[in-house]
Amino acid sequence: MTPQVQAFWIFVAMACLVAGFFLWVARSTRQAHEVNQDAARRLRRNFFYSLTGLLVIVLALTLRHMPYPVPTERPERIIFVVGKQFAFGISSRPIADDADWEAATYSAPVQIPTGAMVEFRVSSFDVNHGFAVYSPSGELLGQVQAMPGYVNRLRMRFRRPGIYHVFCLEFCGMDHYRMRGLFFVVPRTNTQSHTRSLLAGTGE
Ligand SMILES: [Cu+2]
Image 1 (cartoon, protein in one colour):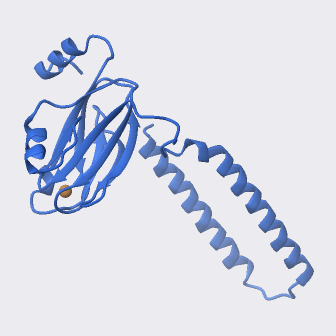
Image 2 (tube, helix red, strand yellow; image 1 turned 180 degrees about the vertical axis):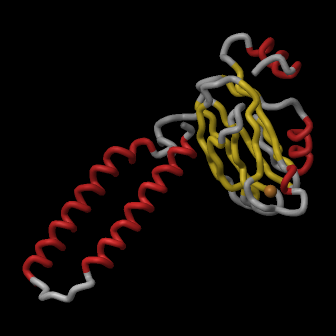
Image 3 (spheres, helix red, strand yellow; image 1 turned 90 degrees about the horizontal axis):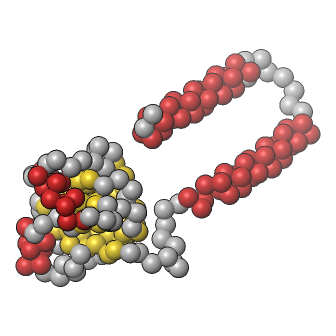
């Protein structure tokens, strides 16, 4: 099951739970009866403490998996990305102006070694774009906004070698649908021959 399908089923289960709770409340309020103030206060207090406990447990279990940069961890590769209607310039050198962007757009795709911590520094030369990275099999792995006058940093690590596509996920104009880019993830050894096989279409 892909993460998207898992998320869908979790959502369905939670929606059923909420709907069931509403039904239960609606049914239980049909007959009017005395409210026991002490019991209500106890219930409210227990509810507060158990929710707080649940929140702390969930935070403790999930917070360390947040994909935020760790200040002490330095990226192995820095890749510069600039969106401009309607393509992505992706380069291992800074993209400062239109000439740099053009060169990045037309040069050979950037190569990233497997397992390397990569920091994408993402910006835009015109309007907002969405920089979204897709795996060779078409799964969305991560995305960040490409904004004019601002640099967003997205750190990622790729385990699988192959051709990774970038699509724009922000409607940015008439030709938004064809706005894309790509880069290669290559095994650490034998980089050149792997790139040749990717270019020839015999690699993954
Ligand atoms: Cu777009």
